[in-house]
Amino acid sequence: MTFRNGGRLMRGRGGRRKVCEFSRLGILPDYKDPERLRRFLGPTGKILPRRRTGLTAKMQRRLTIAIKRARHMALLPFVERSVTDRRR
Image (cartoon, rainbow, N blue to C red):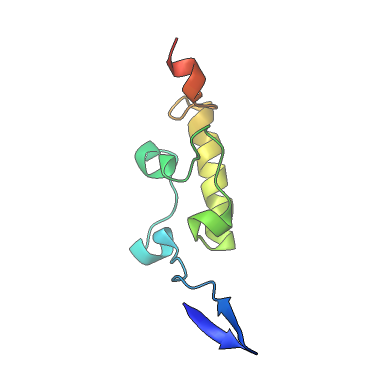
């Protein structure tokens, strides 16, 4: 989306705001559902921030607790193998 501002073309941030997946589905993050939790992890296994996940602050806190519980129960890995490690 571009528009004029004093003779210069400005590019807007555009895009739609993400909707909290858990609130939309009416569920809570659960450590027993590792497939759903895995979508909120980056390629190295780090928990993605709110600005990337689109979750509310409350759901992000609950998600973090659920991921940490799943990691301690060995349902999720603490770290993912990097691209260079996969070749070996």
